[in-house]
Length: 350
Image (cartoon, rainbow, N blue to C red; front, side):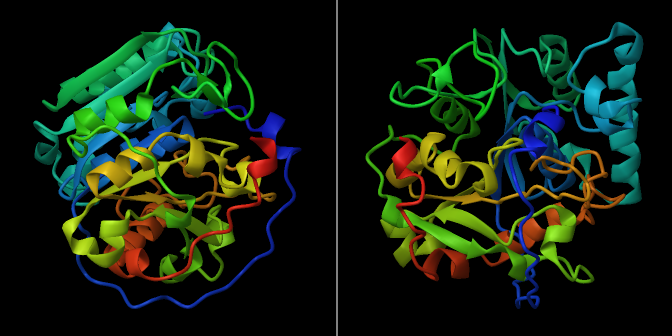
């Protein structure tokens, strides 16, 4: 949801890289998902569209499913206007129910009882508190197991509890990771039911690069055309490297300007997930968007249908969602293959 113009100047386009479709399992494994900003919107779309296999969602600064139908949605899904939002959530429910009836997303009954975690900073000027409360209202309608955290004085940012890195809590600006002495990743993962043990020391040697281009949908010749990078990342704990089928799976969608193109692996390393993954045998997949110079998306995920994912962007046919589901279908091979990602490209900025 970030304004894209301030980020576009920060990045040159990636070179296009083609790849063949990989052979995939037909089964998407059960998993949970979370995200921040445009990644939060993507996580919401992911959860609602694939609720039969997505067992919970964490949303930090994200709008309800269907928000893209609002006029001037890129602005209004963050900035709250009573004129625009009056009656909007009812429209989103109708939009969701119609898609479920058409069979382009899973039945909404799957959401009943599922854990949903919502975070909003009191100083966030990009995704207004009333927008997040509308997201709360949206999910309450479907009977989810809801937990909210709306009392931290953070700006528009992913929040961490490690003081050695990140902007001050109320700051708004790149790289949209703020120190607030609050463990957002841990609080979220606990509510989603995927961690019980406290975080432990984790190894950067267990961050592996994924050839994301192998998983693009049929008919897409170049993954960059759908505003996704050639590569993604996965954190695989030691036990899961040996026996991935015994481990849980969590998907993390970064926000605008937080992909490898902008931060190298800082978001993968510093967002707080990996210590919990190591302690709780949890495989964490970090899909990567990219800056598409033709579409000027500033590395944001396509929750609007304007950045390459196509008109089915929030359905099971959306090309970005399909790419992620294809990776999940192959997660056991992803978890046991490949080599550790380079560890030295972002350490100078610590």
